[in-house]
Image (cartoon, rainbow, N blue to C red):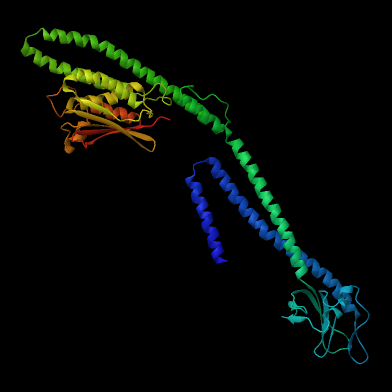
Length: 456
């Protein structure tokens, strides 16, 4: 019994662990309902048979009590002091041998018994609380101690009936009861499943609308939702609207600033070039610093994200091919070979312009430093894609890699640039919940790994 209980307890714990791992609300609700129903059905399967058995035993004892009353009324003592039964009892089973219904009357010296006992006695134990019949069958009994005025000793009278018919009736009832309980369990569980499905239907509608948002087919959630989740939908729509407004405003300001500063800076540069060379070198450096600051902050403004954050999608393989066409022309004299191994079926959840900015900066660095070959490949890890760009150039020492990602840091002052490229890529990747890492390439140069979310 203990082993069975331990087994059931372990099974219940396993089910609870499964329910915790499973993120489906429907599965959790159905699991809780199934566990509760199972407990109730098991309790009913144990308690109801016990109550029925007690009822059948009590009913049998009531009938036996009537027979005992009749037996007590008919017991007499003859002139010789012997116990006799005056007449027959009304139940004919007392006259049929081994019928299952028996009576016996006993004193210290003498006894009477029913014909149904034939030549045997009721095996009385523990003062009548337990008794066996002539065939060792267990009996349901009632007993009484009589005091007759003709005798100086008490008379013990007992009436018993075979318990097997009661047990057989109980087993038959239990079989039918379990059929009813199992049907009840299945019916109630189906009803609960239908109720849970109907109750969670608004969440399914929300999921469909979110899919439309991700695909760019809608810009808000517009279905009718129950009052319990309506505030969440309202706040989500407000957040989407606020995000889109801020994004539009930031990009408009960035565009206006770029347009407003471009012409004055060009004029100032042209005017400086008209000055003597000793003045040019002094004035062009701060102008270049101003240009670097503008480029950096405009790049930060462009990292505000996509116009529709849930529906952006870009193909890295296509963008690499497109960008490489331009760089092949710019660095044509170096005869760099670029190998694009990115799966053409993969898409990332990044706006195309921002992906061009990130991949373009990394490819430009590779073209600048590679001796002959650039290899670009990808790997999917769970819900992210790692775009890796490797070259066979000199690379970056391990102690300088973290420094290279900082804003404005240039490890080689002899090569043109502002030192903003890797920093902008790093921050743009972070704005898309991605990352940028630098490592040593198997080709001997630098390996840059850009991690981004896979678009669904």
